[in-house]
Length: 291
Image 1 (cartoon, helix red, strand yellow):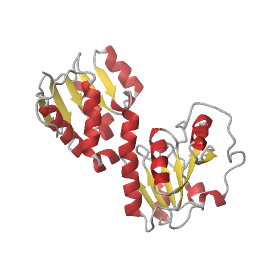
Image 2 (tube, rainbow, N blue to C red):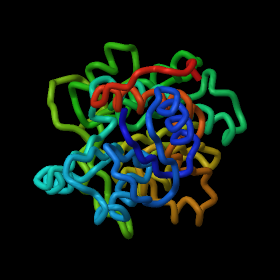
Image 3 (cartoon, helix red, strand yellow):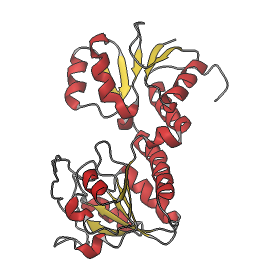
């Protein structure tokens, strides 16, 4: 039997607490550190780095800390202390499972934020990683006219193979307060795209829905100046997102940064993903009935 501490008052963490308890584990669920000699600590995925800073002085050798987006230097330094930081999304299969809940949440946000159906509408998915791939497929299944925007040419080739229009991303112009430092991709494969010269205003103005998954400043004033006045901008990149929100506010654009979508729209499914990862590190025996 393990001793676990779950931090963060969100629905996903609540379900994780219930699932661990049903497996006969000793679990403490609260919003700040309580001493207890834990085998593992589960941080809220959307705020893992913040919580890690808060509890860092309490951690001891032999403990596991589960969360997301841990800086590599933190992982390395903690490992030297005998503390193991486990990123849920880097475990086998987890990123795609999480992408399903994220994509469904993004579509829900678009439906609520927009004034028209998704069917038949021109839409852009920026980034074709785990979330972008699942999101593009879901939007296409709903009848959307989907274009994929991606820098990685191998991913562009995959998008084309699945029947999407593919446009090779170009380097964005940084906007005030943001640096264009995050890489969008790391592979290369020759593929015919619409790249070459800079994308024109006619490219950006065609979309009624734009979904961004790229954690970099890819939609600054230089591009937002050309989008439709009634465009719906759904940003699911990790904070601070990929849009110039100051520009959006000043110009009345319908833009929304949607972080933590799995916890908001599918907290039970999201918790199941987390416990599957935890179970790969600890032997958890099911005692109660399935939730």
